[in-house]
Image 1 (cartoon, one colour):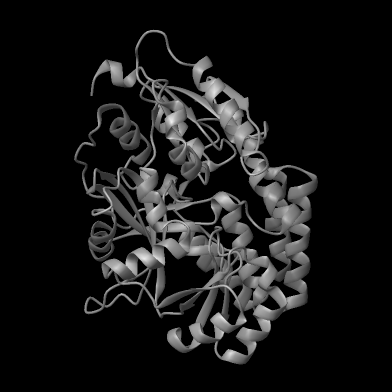
Image 2 (image 1 turned 45 degrees about the vertical axis):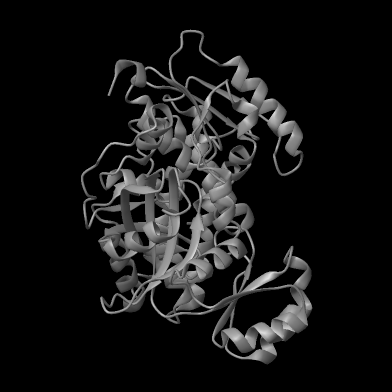
Length: 439
């Protein structure tokens, strides 16, 4: 690890996310200069002491060319004149965009993203289904359809229970489960306009959700770890808010079989469903060609993916790393408690009481600040402590979160609490977490 490597400069995108915050912390603590950006200016990165500068660019969803032009302009502006490493590191959905338009940044910086040709084989979801089935990778039966007639044929191929899934998107949005054909066709008739370019019908397989996080060097798996969600918010389709590291041998083998032949170079996150039986293979569900919501957890488990990705971009090689710490836990502050309240509210015990407490807690978070909101949440929960079931559920949630590393450590970077309100603000305004937290 050379001094030149440590003295580099990196532009980190999607500064609103806790993923970007983790990347900035990882790089900055080794001496790398971090510049953040987003299409909004009130972000966690804009308040982090680990970030030297922060700029705002046009939204790539609203005006792609304007976005690319501004990014190219900023990359030129901040290019070091002393020859030190200079990297553009996309964080979220912009990874695909930056990779596809990599040529615009050639000669200016190094783009830390997998090759677009490889990304295009697994993203969007319909591309993954085609590629995985062609390569014999263990995926649930999946059919891409466009209209009601094709859906009816797909149902015969896939069988039930089955899931309708959008071709793209994150966080479980647009996914619906069906046990028979009639409600499936009725749903499509009413909602087909919500699915651009058709949708996928996929066999619903048994098991629990697992996430494998990985870094490849020219098709070779160099670093990897897996985790499962002990708690999610929302409970059934949401992001993990308490995570735990688990053994990953069964998942890593499948990842190598899929991404190795594609000459993958960079990070990736793969979603699996598995019943835990050694005699049965995990089902590959999705590949995200980018960083992931549980990035902080991966780093806390001993695999510093942001630094490895940076070193890979600069030197062309990723070093060998020690295995992840099995059993390591992390939590998203405040949201894990909200998930516990939701869990209680979903139960049948004193539902109206708990629902009132839940609303009071969220109102406090909205009208005051995070600390006062948490105090209010505790006070609100006190109203239902006499309900044995509610108390038990809260104790379980506290036990799961106890000892878990907090994803936002305010004493180390106190000003990011202002940007972190973006997370709770989205929760309160839209009733859901931001998309970058959805796995």
